[in-house]
Length: 241
Ligand SMILES: Nc1ncnc2c1ncn2[C@@H]1O[C@H](COP(=O)(O)OP(=O)(O)OP(=O)(O)O)[C@@H](O)[C@H]1O
Ligand SMILES: [Mg+2]
Image (cartoon, rainbow, N blue to C red; front, side, top):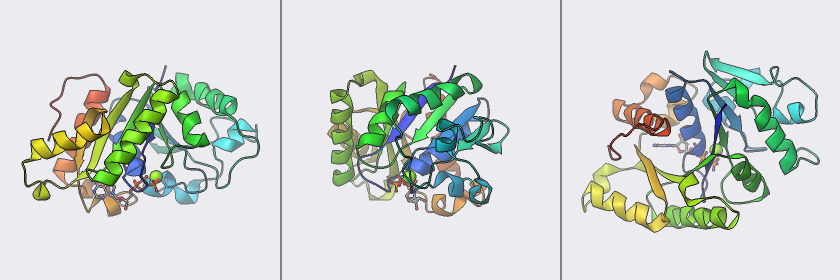
């Protein structure tokens, strides 16, 4: 039975979709993983995974019985699949429809990641409701960190438990951490009041590696994703890189 993990952020462009694509690749070395693109109208996982020319159906087609749940799946690799997002808001798509959709895939995968749009709106509320665990992504700047804090507060108000929510700090630029890496990262985490799941370095190559070749990413970045994947699997791995 799949563990469902929803990936949220307060600010846009902090790396949610990049995180989903790369954590999906890391976990799918040993586990079966489904990525659901939840960014209606602005989907990007199909492009990041090099599948944009292959999208015929999306998850709204499954909800409205226009295709089978199997037919909507796009294969990224043996253990990794994608369910593309609709390009426009489906009519009368409600919480129950989406929860039913996710539950239909649960017995086929070990992990299901839902890539949400930025902010906290009706769609992200539904995705949070579908989740066993929620990962909030933030970059280590004050605006993004405060937005992550606000997402955490909203999740708690909506009934999420504190231990369901974890933080990933992305685009950490260690060269500019003048007060020491550990202190800077600790201060950043403190501002969100969330538990840290991991830190991913700023890596210019991530921007071009998505639809090209994940081998382009530096060893340090690949390692960061692998360490986070091990923590998701419940292993005790040192937090900072
Ligand atoms: N660790 C990183 N280092 C450098 N660039 C990164 C990193 N992670 C993501 N990026 C880049 O940041 C940009 C935004 O990433 P991405 O689309 O994954 O963010 P997002 O949070 O999904 O955005 P949106 O809120 O629009 O859905 C992309 O150009 C991506 O390549
Ligand atoms: Mg995105």
